Amino acid sequence: MKRLVPGAAALALIAVSACGYALEGRANNVPAHVKRIGVPTFENQSSTADLDRVLSDAVRIELRGRGFVVVQEATGVDAVITGVLRPIEVNVLALTDTTRQASKYAMTVQAALEFKDLTANKTIWSNPAVRVTEEYEATGTISINDPAAIFSQDANALQRLARSFARWVVSAALEGS
Image (cartoon, rainbow, N blue to C red; front, side):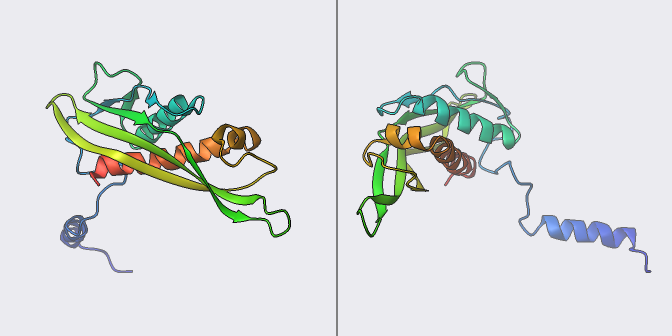
């Protein structure tokens, strides 16, 4: 077996680092001084109970997974993510052949969000029209226009929607897209 020359190993490391590879979890769009992020509970303008708490918690968890210190307060932090949640849209995607009841539907959460660097008093990212959709199989006879009915019949539906929302929001905020 041949030994790798130390200089060649260093050269290979430099070449790989120059190809655009980066550690997952910390995007280049976030200033280096941002270590502690506040995510106060989002404002809930929907009629869906606990939507604000569940989505805010999911965003906090996703940010922690990316290596940030995350708190619920908007003070004493380097940056803050704030949001206003709009009513959830429910759309039927498929009907059963026999009874013409919903067999598959999509729920879309809509929000206006901002990620602001409090140290520099500068907006890092904002999107007034965030839309995240998750598809679900119908689990029984439900009122297709009522997200609360869907969430009560499918206990995991809101959690799945929250995880999708959080992944999208955090990726967009950190990458600036």
